[in-house]
Length: 243
Image (cartoon, helix red, strand yellow):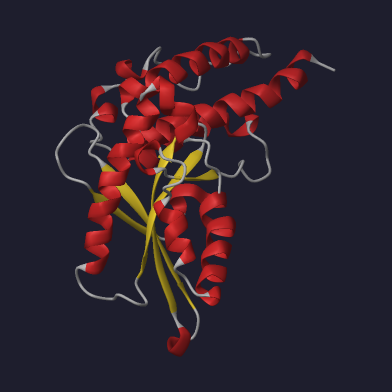
């Protein structure tokens, strides 16, 4: 087997990991400081493998550390999706031609307590019909498409660069008389993870402030999740409660 053929599976894996990590930082789910060690490890191996191809390829991400990103990227002054698409576009031929690897959905653990899972509590509060719609939407849409699902981004305020924010996945299905309206608040994490923070049943609470209050609560969870991921002693556990 040619060397390039043996090299490509690992290059695809590294490209996907680097892409997911950068998406997490640009989305505000992980701080550059917390992400930098993993970024450096991935960057070194990816650069070696890309330059070993015939002909050699430049590295997907030209910076040795996340801290060396151009200021506009780190400050979040450009659209994150556009930045990532621009970086990844030259490597499309190296990626698997089938659909990209799905995201792994994990439960956010409040305070690092594996028994305290707000999103699991939300799932338990749903009717059978509502849960069926939620389960299908999470599996077929969110896990497959990541941040490209229908929804909205809520700012968490408080300043900072990149600006803290949470993603909201909007789920709407069924006839008007039996409409299922659900909201899923989430953030992305290292290793192509999506952390499910909490949910909101808009079909039961369609008040003006209900969704905003849920987003505000999700922002607190986001800060807790980011702190767990940033700490080496709790990082693995924070990403391990797979749905």
